[in-house]
Image 1 (spheres, rainbow, N blue to C red):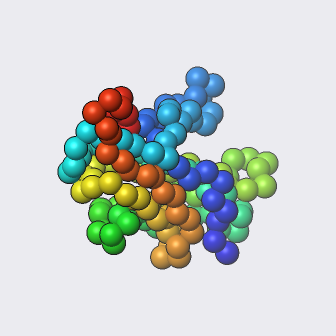
Image 2 (cartoon, rainbow, N blue to C red; image 1 turned 90 degrees about the horizontal axis):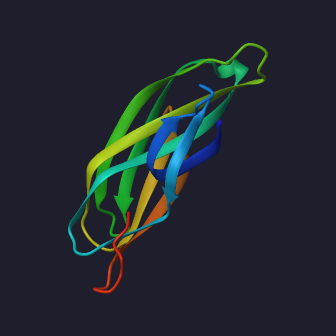
Image 3 (cartoon, rainbow, N blue to C red; image 1 turned 60 degrees about the horizontal axis):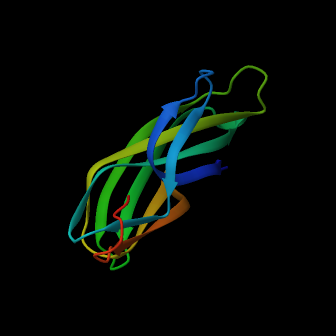
Length: 140
């Protein structure tokens, strides 16, 4: 059975929580504006948490692909998750992060980030990319 997607988002950074348990997502975004295109982001993170049943502990292949509204495919990235529950937990909560450095955006529109586990599509998150007007403050 596929895991449940508890969190799946695009953010600017992530840091380990001061307690040592969990993470803090820094500036979760669903929109980015740029003065001109093509544009390059310094760093974006696609982050999330998956909830696996105890029977599904072990290694799982996770992949992330990016596609623009005009069906231009961006990078596809993959990694192996080692899923293991903590003692006395009912589920195995597994965080993941994909770091996208120098991510190229061809033009305004939507960029879809698609998440798959062991080849099964699980989730999608979208950011809207816009061109800033001359009087608009640029943000990512």
